Image (cartoon, rainbow over all chains, first blue to last red; front, side, top):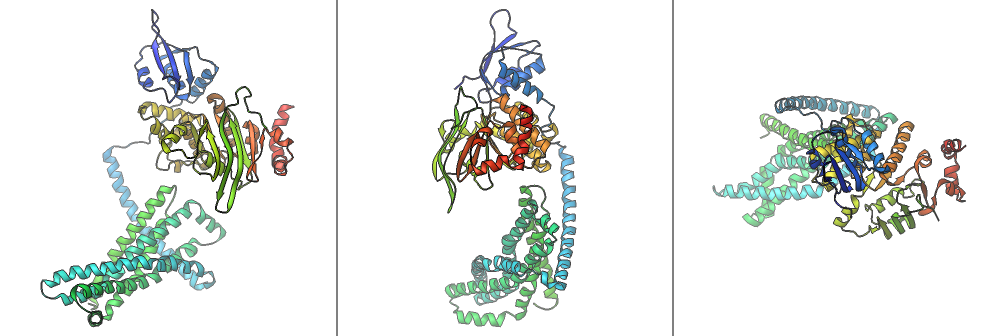
Length: 369
Length: 268
């Protein structure tokens, strides 16, 4: 390996000459740059006779001395001269970093940006919903354009493939509710009401809500990432130019899939959660399954099922709209896909929970208690 | 079979022997041999799907071949552990097809990244200066330095990718279709840039291209990939002397003849 780059003043009376030695290369410059900065004064002579090799970094250091201190180069061979010329040509004032603003204006700017983005997102979402409605209308008047294959494929991905994880999740939630409920109700000697708790909360709230959260995480994010990536690779633009409406080809199948699958999955989740609670009641509270089922039929009104089934498609639509809308907003680079996917899931879950609260008040006030 | 660019010192930089690459049933390379000598620009051509990029990925260690040996700078590349490979990696620079810039970093930060990785002792001021002149050297306007890759055009991204590939002052440069997607003026400027850099820095260049003009303008030798191996390697004249159908139709097709035209007039 070549020696580390070094320089020292020549001995004797003429100490304005700096003799360089070793390899003036990136790997060997070490702290040479800092030491050269300390050299003061004009008209230094740089003697390169002892230099074994030089690359652009070495050439840059030499060139910098020439530029800033009017130094003179001696003993450079042809290659070195050429390198020095190349580097000198490439010396232009370059601004390395983007502009930095003061913290105060930056915070204010970010707050403003956040508000305007929130407003625009809400508006955009409403607009997107409108566009989806128009596309649905077009499909109803032109049923030939309906993409059955795409829709059935979405059904499978959104619905059938989610059965396992949603079943497992619901089963565990049923057990948890039953266990927590039993512990609290035991204080009043009312363990038997655990069944009410399980049945009613599963059908009315938890089944659909937990399913919505799972679908938002599974499918809403997938919609945003898929459409976002298609946006980046100009597939969406290609689609438009061929005359295929992305709303019809991409959004409607996904929207339909979540709208149709959410009630089914929500019902499935509620049943499995109830079964999980039943298992707990059987094992821990000695309530036999037959009694459990009979009690469930007595205490859970059919309106609880309706409440769940009415909410489910609305939540499904929200999830699909948020996912597809955010996917369509992707522009620029791969990082955007990640940001938009996160936004899709957060938005979907947030809207689902807000709407769930609205539904709760609504159903109570119409007497479905 | 061939003469290196510099007959006095034919130092092999890349040696590939008996390379075999396969993806499942599909065999891309079979007993492929290739040698790249120090200081030359080797153009690699071949029809689509002949495995040009796979060959490059094998050499730089992104793809482990099923069989064969690969040596770069005289060091075997297959089965290297990460630490040993690092000392070789700092001696080469790679320009991927799309530039492969890191999208969360500015152009200047992209160029500085390999420098920081390998030479963490360099001070910020010098890093900024190095990034600055590399960016200008790669043919980018200075205003591009603080920009993010998403704000650049395709051609500028390629140049930024080249600036990053040159960051470590490599001895060996891999270029995967550097002029694809550039306008003819931009492509010619890019050719000249690479030729200049090669002359100034003594680079060895492994260049995958479809661009016949590039082949004529800057390549010392050309390797032709077909039938899962290198069917011919040499100067374009040597290749033309070979009686292979693909080579003949490649260089003697309408585009090939058009690209050869300026060379002929220059010679005359």
